[in-house]
Amino acid sequence: ADFEAWYIKWLFDDGDSDESDNEDAGGDGNVTTSATAQGGWGNMFKTDPDSWKCNACMVQNPSDKIKCMACEAVREGKEEEAEAEAEAQAAPKGGGIGSGGFTF
Image (cartoon, rainbow, N blue to C red; front, top):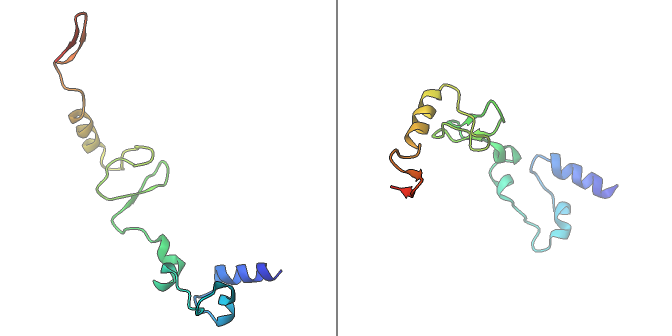
């Protein structure tokens, strides 16, 4: 029951701590994490304002990507760019495997 109370307080506390919270931590009792030092847990989950969310898998992607990094779905409105990129990355013409082996 004591652990449950501590855990609930730890999860939902507003970042203010008293010395009784850090009894088992050792040291001087001043324990600071990067999440709480920057204003709480909400800052950990902030996204880049220029990023975009994939409509297929809901993964957040950087603004410079036209395909989702997880499922490779094309970003909405970038279909023509994705098609042009795919054509540019296609295998070069003139090479292949014939009856005589590889040709370059």
